[in-house]
Length: 96
Image (cartoon, rainbow, N blue to C red):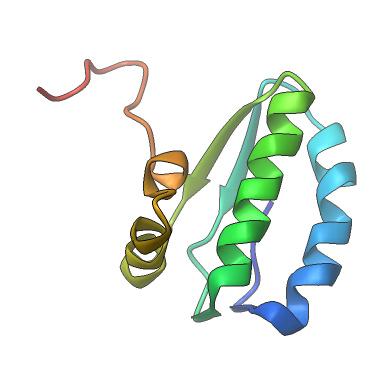
């Protein structure tokens, strides 16, 4: 799923309404591409967390790519950044 440039409170309800069908339309990994985001707020984080919950309920993996640094910083303030941070690729071992 590709997020649009604007995913603020004004667009959140319409985007959230698209999630169930988007999650149901695939298998394995549900990927959200946030690279186009230019305007976002805490409702964007809620939207991503809802997408993650729906993917998990459908037995699918979840991945967000292209998260703007400022959005990840906002997620960090809410204590949910680890849920949205990109996970290491399966082909390489985790750093540490």
